Image (cartoon, rainbow, N blue to C red; front, side):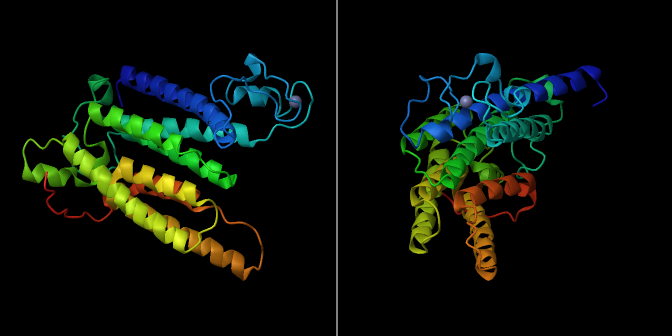
Length: 307
Ligand SMILES: [Zn+2]
């Protein structure tokens, strides 16, 4: 990082990823409110949930709008929930951190031997770096998962159409760069076939296997009568299997399940009716944990796929 141009570009692009995340966070607030209520997403303008007055364009800027109004509606003066700027801030931070970790840091914490070793700075390869696709793939996944988690926390059901949109995004990114969903078996692929290039077929097999694992786990959750909405559990798990394959789905579910169990036992001991956060939110935290520690997870020797 001695090169001033590199440092400046890193700052500018990270700021851009933050702003891009903030706008997506703002849109996420719209999705979480409108999708379960079957309201149109794109057409209607945002309005104050209390006085129904349309929100002015200048007040609708992510984070800044809420701060400038000091959390109160311009028209009725009633407080606007801090949840909106918090989600915008969280998605903005997610965009910036994932960009630094994956693109600038060349996937510092992702499984080893993922993509040929990068010796040059990220900027010299931009925009032809595969890590950019990895960044987009992980960001889209996290965004969808967080949307499921927030709808689940509201005890609402997510329409299945949303999973279909996730599928379209995933397929588009896989066509661009197959192997996004096979991070934990790319070094394995490389050993068998040089130059190891993940194919669409191996990618499809990985997604299909991930979704079968997801169906099994959601079946177990349904049998155990896990709190919150079963449809959100199933869709979020299918999304995880589709994007990241069977092994990731299994690990993430184990982490999410244990964390949920601890919370449930805790609330039982305290005899409080305080509701625990649901499985999907735990799955999101599990993704976050794995993405920052993935390189140090035990490697798995995969069986040879018949493709
Ligand atoms: Zn109002």
